[in-house]
Image (cartoon, rainbow, N blue to C red; front, side):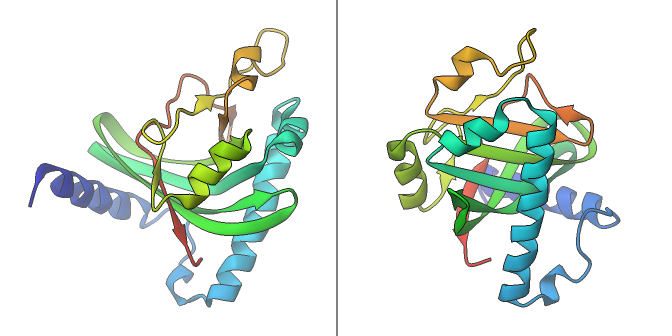
Length: 192
């Protein structure tokens, strides 16, 4: 087993152990039919977008301008020294779902505990969206840079962020996260 496989296995074990008693996971998730799971992801994505619009001024207009928006309503990150992240969501173009994806990630460092958050990726150019859709696994920071949105002193999204081909938002229960990177997060298309 190489170091990468060991890291992924350790992170996965830490994530599973930490989320076993988490109230944001669904106890019957494995027993759901694909149709039921897709409907649940659609509803969770709608709710996550509503939270984004309510908490981040200008986000509704920015989503409307994007060529596609990946909504990951619940991403669980957990670990102790070595950590992992997992979440499922949907890609939307306009108001229509066009595909389902999962996020997987591993990290090493000062990690302790578990956290749930929502992640949004806005593909502002057709080229960025097409690269994402045609990949067999798209990794933030490798396949494209993701400009994580920050709010300026005027309460608006930072202008430098608005000029990027891929813009990310990360929401926790307390609001928009700043100074966070999505690098290394891998997004893989699924059948949901």
